[in-house]
Image (cartoon, rainbow, N blue to C red; front, side, top):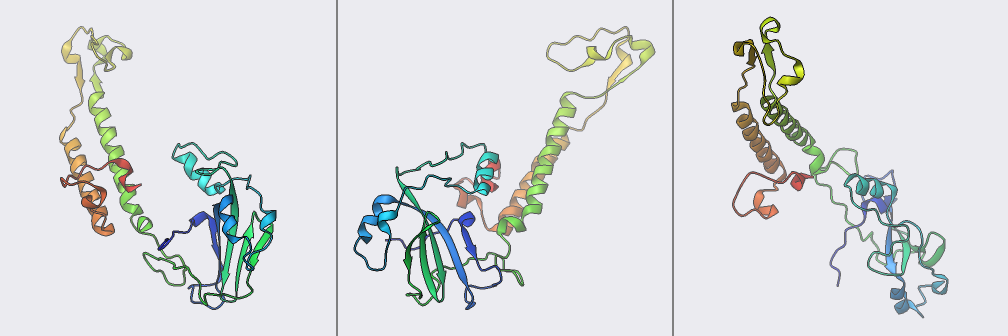
Length: 251
């Protein structure tokens, strides 16, 4: 028995003028894909009709937004008409209001229309992590921490820039005494630099403590993320309490 089910965000719609599901003008619609063979149990049920007209859904299962997200994450998109775990799926659109309950199949076949709400309520609960005035959705925890995520990315980029600079430092060269070309001083394994005067080339000094500072700063940022979100290491399966996290832990 299903205790609760998360509605697919990109397949759910509501009355755009409400701020709460308690509003009497509330209506909510959402899409789900149901295996064709599951409709056998509704045969003969007077609340359902047009079941013989049901056909397998052959369109896209994912919305355009979902396809863009999947492409961004470099995962293979679902093929058109992909049946996921089942070979035959029917697209259902459920509509709830305080005065009605409707089920529409494949966008054009009405299979149920009660003209009343047999539950007397909207069987959906909206979860708002951070409520905002005059907003239905509020703010997500990730949105609140986007500044910390940006800071973590910036710090990582600065660390990489500093490491590259130290591995391939700039040089101060006396043109009159060095007598060499620029390509001969590029840093590479086994490279030999021929000069007339070894004091004519001086690499700029780098402070290697900058790398250690960047690593410590990254740890501080991760601690800030954990403190504001309450997503501590023990919640992501790290039993040793280490602060080095995989990059996609916070994605």
